[in-house]
Image (cartoon, rainbow over the protein chains, first blue to last red):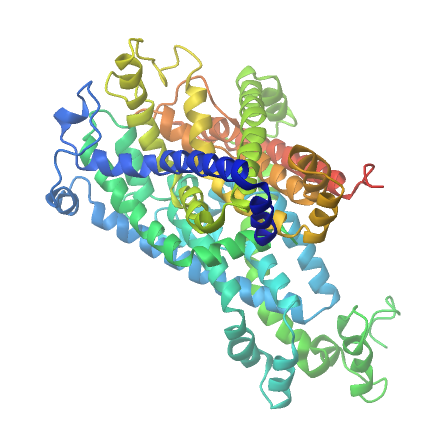
Length: 286
Length: 339
C-alpha cells in the first residue's frame, strides 16, 4: 500500500511534495509533544527545588548530578530499592505464571476439541467482556479470606488467570499446523512433552507478545496493588502515588523515582515493540 | 452404553466434535463392556490430558472470577458492613440505596461525560495518525514508535507529570507559566473551583492511549485489499471521498472493536482520577467515576460496606455486559450500505 501511495505522490508532482513536507512538519511537532512528558520527568528529576518553584519555567535542568538517582536508593524513608524489588517480583511472577497457565489452557482448548472445551471457551470469552477492575470488591473479599493481603500471592494469583491470554494462545495455535505435533506423537511422545517441546518453541512470537503485554500491565498496575499491598509488598507505582498525593513533596526526588520506575518498561518496550504490536494486532482482529 | 442411558447420543469420551476424535473412540475399545473409567479417560487418555492442560486455568477462572461475582451478588442482599458472613438480610435495600443515591448517579454522569469526550476524541486522533502514517515514507517506523511509546508509561507516572508540572495550579506550572508569560492569569486547574480538571483528565488519557489504538487501526487499514483502492482511484475517488466511501466502511469491524475497548476503558477509569485529584488519602467530592465511587463507599473509607460494594459491582457488571451485547449487535447486524 505504501508503494502505491508513493507512486501517487510522484504523479502529484510539486504540490504533492509540498503537502507531504507539511505533513512531515505537523507529525514532527506532534512527535515533540508526545515525547514532552518524558522529557519533563527527566527535567524535573534533575532540577533543584528553587528552580522548580520559580515562576520562570526553565527547560534545562540545573542539578544534573548522578547523586540524584543514587540518593533515591539510600533514602530509607522512600525505600525505592525495595519497592522496585517488589514490583519486579510481582511483574515477572505474574508474567511467567500467566503465560504458563494460559498457554497450557490455550493448547488444551485448541488441540482437544470436545464438549467441555466448548463450555470452557464460552466461560473464557464471557470474562473477556467483564474486566477484572469492575469486580475488584469481590476479588478483594476473596483474597482477604485466603489471608493473602500484603503478600506476593495476593498480588499475583487473583489477577493471573487471563482470559485474554488464553484466548490469544488458542487462536494462535488453531492457525498453526499440527503436523509437527502429530509426527512427535507418532514417535511416542506424550501430549505433555509435545506441548513443551514442539508447540511452545514454535509459538515464541505469540508468547513474547503475551509476555510483553502482561509485563507492562503488571508493572503499571495500580488499583489491585492499592487494595492488596501494604508495607511488605509495596510496589513502585504505589510508592510514587503515596508520595505524590502526600503533602510536602520533594519534587526532584519524586520525579527521579518516576524516572527509575519507567526505565524497565521503556527498555522492555523498545526491545520487544515488534511483539507488542503483534499482540495488539492479533487481539483486535480475530 | 450401559452406564449412561440418559444421553444416548453422547459420544464416547465426551467428544462432540466431528471427525476421528469422536468416532474412533468406540472402535478402539472392544465391545459394549467399556467401563466408565475408560470412557472418562477417552481415547489414549486424551480427556485426562485435556483436563491436565485446562484445569489450572479453569480452577483459577472459577475461584477468582466467577465465585467472587456470585458471592458479591449474594452479599448485595445483606447489610454486610465490615463482615463477609452477614445475617441481616435487607433484600433490595442496597440496590435501592445506590440507584436513588445522588452520588452514585453523579458517578454515572461523570462516566458519561468522560466517555462522550474521550471515546470519539481518541478514535478520531488515532485514526488520523494511522492514516497519516500510511504513506509517510521512511520516517514511518520512527513516528509509529514515538506515538506508541506512551503505552509503556503508567497512569501514576503520567498523573505525576500532569498534576505537578503541566496542570500545576501554582505559578510554576508549565501551562500557567506560559499563560502568565503572555499576560494572562494562572488557572487553578485541579482545585475544583472550575471544571478545568477535565482538560487535564482527558489530555492525560488521550496521550496515554492514542498510540495503542493507532496500532489497532493501522492493522485494520492493512487488511483492506490494495485493489479496492486501485479500483477507487480509477473511478476518481480520492482524499475525503476515498475515506468516506472506501476506507471507513471497510474499517467497520475494527472501528466497532476500538470503540468498545475505549468505552470499557473509560468505564474502568480509576488510576488517573485517583492520582491527579486525591490528597493524603482524601478524595474531593467532584469528578468521581464509578470505580472511584465504588472504591470510596466500599473499601476506601474507614468502614467497609461490602453489601453496598456487592450491589455496586452487580450494577456495573450488568452495564458492561449490556455494552458487550450492544456492540455484538452492531457488528453482526446486516450492513445496509453494502450494495
